[in-house]
Image (cartoon, rainbow, N blue to C red; front, side, top):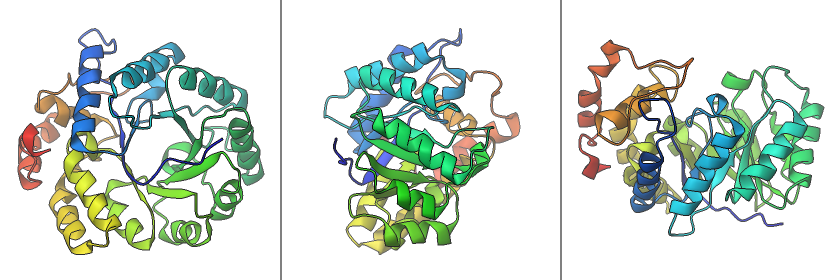
Length: 300
């Protein structure tokens, strides 16, 4: 088992669909290639940004396989393998790593709201069942279950749990994790807008939504912060705030997929129960891209 992953930007990839609602293989390949060219550090298919709850397990395998086949630079692939049942999470992990994932990402089980002890047992069971490293994902806004700092730190001692995507927005909690974690356990912001403050606290990077649109700019922001050039990182943060805010005017990934469609990078098609972005927000896209300096694909 290895704990290697590294810092930087991991893009929470969209899953492009065609007009029939099927996975658009060509658009997915183009998306992966564009992310590599933009200098991101790893790719995260089949997460909430990838509409994973609407994908069958076979479709998730296909997305991971296409991503792995397309990557040409050896980027890690951290595939979303979240499940509400531990046995299902273990099987999903097995199948997605067989499809080409180098790591898997696991949010706490949804709806059944396990205790902290249940979370420890769940994540340990998943990590024990695979030779591929596991990244935790704390997103209580979606799961209704917070992974407490004490629980994260206990899990961080497992040799096959390599880090956490923290989207609780609780700076005290995240700061406690950063202060007390093992040296080989990495912390990634789960909120684009909190990337800079969390890196100032010592986090290693972000698993990003807006890097779908602006991979090079997000990679530059994180690289500047990692190198201690917080002035440059701050300038990029302020530049991208309109885009970061807009990405959540409706449930993710509705806005970011609408932006990608506006740029001609994919279809705006969503899988139900998600719906197309409201017209009032569609009318704002060009202005948001212009204010972020990302009004053209080449600026991304």
